[in-house]
Amino acid sequence: MTLRKRLSWIAAASVAVAVTIAVVVCYAEVRHQLRNQIDSELIAQASVVQNGDYHALAQQFPGIPASSGGPAPYVQAVTAGGEILNLPGGFGSPNLPATSRARAVAAGHGGQYLSDAQVGATHLRVVTFPATLMVTNANGK
Image (tube, rainbow, N blue to C red; front, side):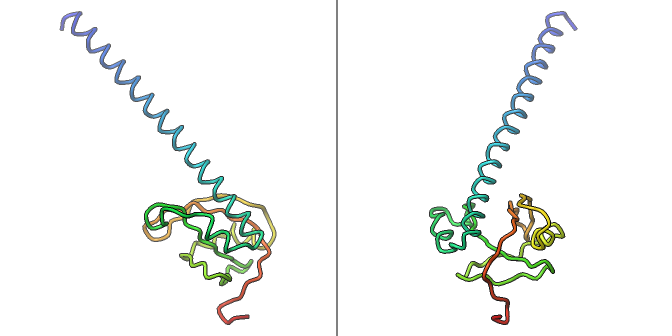
């Protein structure tokens, strides 16, 4: 192989490596920014729920429906024992996993945290926080 061909291959490989590094760094930064935006919106939703204004929660997110990739204002209350409670206002939600950490937060041990959950084929970002809610269970009590 001639020197010219070797230099061409080295230059092409260097450009390929530089482009690959740039793509990986850009992807990581955009992913980080988008996740921070989602986390901020979840924290804002948590604040609305903590204030008990469920109707404002439903009106806060017009536009793209959750089934098309828009925000999903799901609200789920979990007791320290892991029981899922019905919330006033008819906020339907898929049954999110009630992890041991969520039960600990419900029992007053630990504060707000963000996590990921898989419900069926859908990936969700979840904020868990302690709250005092006026709720009823399935028996209306």
